[in-house]
Image (tube, rainbow, N blue to C red):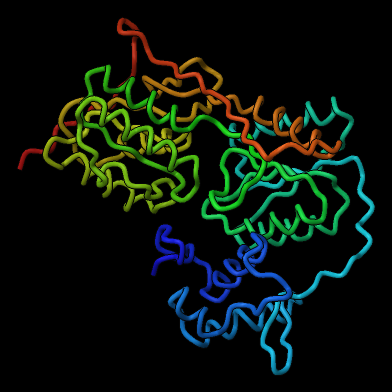
Length: 381
């Protein structure tokens, strides 16, 4: 099923009930201003046609919106977006709240370090709310609308459906800055890495090392950061006249798979005609997992495999596992997010903007000792 505006096919994220997905999409449409209180809301039949769902699902999504007070039914006239009564906003403190997954990663640690330092320098308290899933992320954002923080710095989850909740939060006067990735369908302030350049530069570095057959492995599948890195990867291949092979680069999660499934995927790549001689990993945890999986494979593979990472997570100049890696300025991302939130809190009324930070790509020198993974010979039959 395809969105009415011709965008990519609509589909619920894995693990999200159809009615909840439809409800979230409708909330996002309301937040974007597609429906106003003086115009009839989308009908049950239109929901069925627009989202390709059953009548039962459409009715439940509408009933949920009515129960939440988002829309109202008027006898003889239909369903309308509810008028929002003027209410006194909550008393807000000089506080900024960080909302993001509890990843316990070096990436998040660097971001939070910069955010904490800059919020303190600007005179704000910093609160931290970790999200446990997609639905919980929306819950935390909506709760923040009734909280006391003047600003929110949001690190969206993979496959996030929180665009509508973000827009609702902004309507209450809370400054919202998104970090690391953005919502394509919702204009927001954001602090991002130049992920297209990361994908391009890491791929170019591996091609320059003589690799003409590479494969990509990811830890996330549906966020703008990895999509932009994939676009950069494809650009580097095209400029060198190399084919784009989706089987070796598709945005499919690797790290979260069972060990046997991960190793089967690796085996399929390495047993293919013209197998990859380099594996580019989406981030540091994927790099570590990939190296471990290669070493644990039951039988060998031809030639050495060099590894690269699009996100350096170790303090060394180049990870000992990677011949090329991108050092992302995570601490500066946190500082920039705090400054941007502060500007909005203080009344800066300029257009919403994206602050884009450039990563540093580090590549092992030609004469430098490096690590590669060699497959042991297969047992004789």
